Length: 427
Image (cartoon, rainbow, N blue to C red; front, side, top):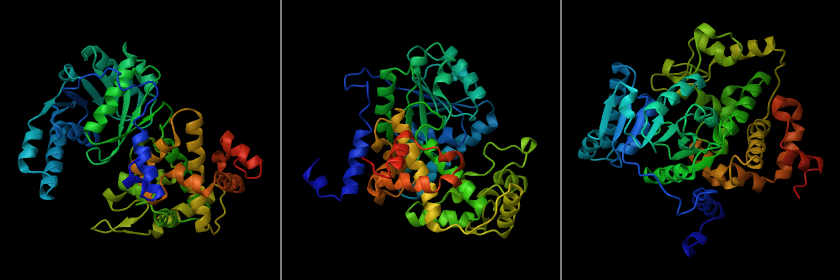
């Protein structure tokens, strides 16, 4: 640590050290051979595929992007151009930089067009059967030595890799949306992922300006696995009597840029939802069935005006109350303190499980994920750093206090269970 860094506040020192530490990977040394990446192939020209492509085009790496049909391919390329032109209008790029980047982009309509790529990233529909089919095809056409990467946000990389004859070449590269903007890249190391492939991915992440964190294989990896605990409690809280805008307000007052229901409206409630298979078994189902699908339809959990400014929705409040009654919930007042504890404490418990299972190498890696991918307030240093400050004993005690309301989230990690059994003493 330099003298200048030593003079920084403790939280800033922690964040700097955490980002450096994330680059140190077990089993990967400085002399691990790297694989030259001179051309990147991307399967899927949608929002994610296009954003991923821009990362490589912007540093001068040629990209081939493939779609099944001409219309989505042309839409994807048009979106890439618009994104670049927006950067020009904001003074972030020169017009000649845009043309230079776009000249490196080759569109294609058949998977064989990816055959000469050194790295192929699939960015297709988040469905295991689809992913497995894609990787069987990639395995058949990719040149020897190519890295085959999935942009999956939660699926099992080992199952995907098993569809190939080169599981050592398969890796997860979980970009965050918008992929050309967000700094975080979760690199998912499968059971058979080779050290050279992992080292190459880490180096490449730095070249495209990303902060990379390595995760092991589990549902949701590091970030989405912890997010799942928070989302489950957010949904349960609104059934018990908290309103979506109150839940969001508590998190934004803590320092997040938005709360879970604002985030859902922004992403679109109908991601992965289908009217023909909807059974009205969740608030989300009922909202989508009423065409309340988020900001894009001007109504989701919130109502939106022409400028997408949100207001609380009486319709949603009534819908939630009716659904809750049908499920046997009795509405009650829920305090801000309870909301915050039930959203954040289960996340810390899940973070401890992730560490104990070896999914993350160190607690600070989890902090890096949440600071750079999910908007965790930097002033707190990240979830695990924050938890140490609050005290694991207090978190264990509060989880034990709320146990009857946590549902399936009430089962604590072994570490927090031991702390709770000792009366909240962490040591």
